[in-house]
Image (cartoon, rainbow, N blue to C red; front, top):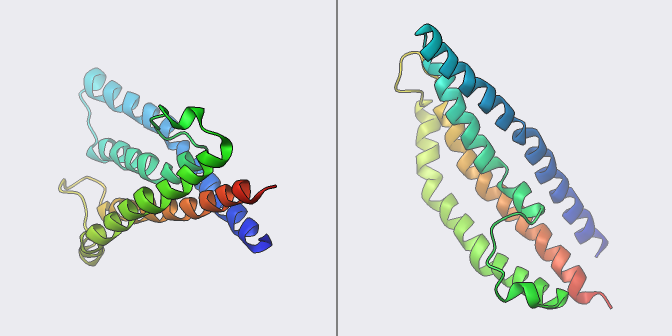
Length: 168
């Protein structure tokens, strides 16, 4: 069980580090969006790369922070029955939910995005705009990161739930 607890802590630390680091992009999104608006409407100046950078940051925050959100148990949950359950029953629901809902969805996302992301890398896909950000392939890679971070956080959550169930 020591290895499993080490693995749980390691996974939690990965998702926490990624989540805390990437969450800072929300501040930059607000600042850059305000700057885009100020430049466009105040000075009639526009930079496509600035506008696209907001989209890139939004994708990063939404996709890369999902594992951290799961770690912190902040995902939306319908608590009609779960709320009144004992801790052990909640742990069982969490294990089953991870195995039969979270993981299948993540594996389906990985499967169906595989060629989509690979083709983007092969082409080194860039912006459709001449002066845009030519790193679309990097943004599409966030899809894989999203699935992988959720899968490994699911492993951590199962270990945590098993610890709770086996606790005497």
